[in-house]
Amino acid sequence: MARYTIREFTEAVGLGKDRDSVTRSGIILKALCNLGIAKEVGTKRVSKGRPAALYEVPDPIVIPLGVASVAVASPPAVEEAAQPDPVEASATGYYYDDDEDE
Image (cartoon, rainbow, N blue to C red; front, top):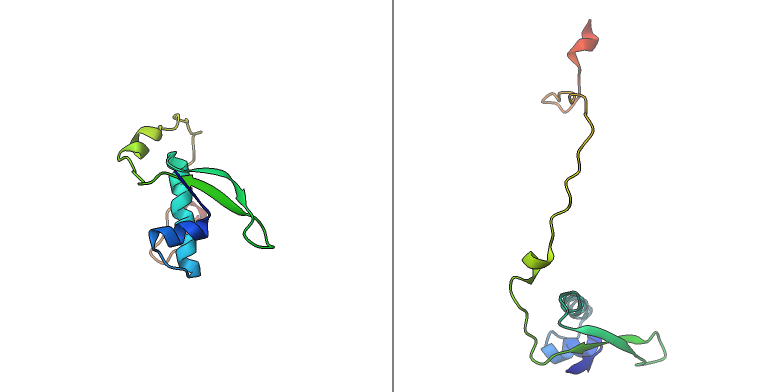
């Protein structure tokens, strides 16, 4: 397993050095962490600024298919309270109620 900051990961996979590429690779790393493929292991001080997050990534990266369908569970059913009938909308977008015309 290799250890990368987001910027180092961007260069390792060949996405480029611009800001958009670094943002994309950060999203990819976060997705890999959510899938359990990569993990955040600490920080690394690169310059005088804020320390960069350090990620441990396997080489090669293998993403199993069908993980999302197994991990997602259906939410429990919630009964809604009785609602009055909705007010009809006209073609102009204004709401009206026929009962108020009397």
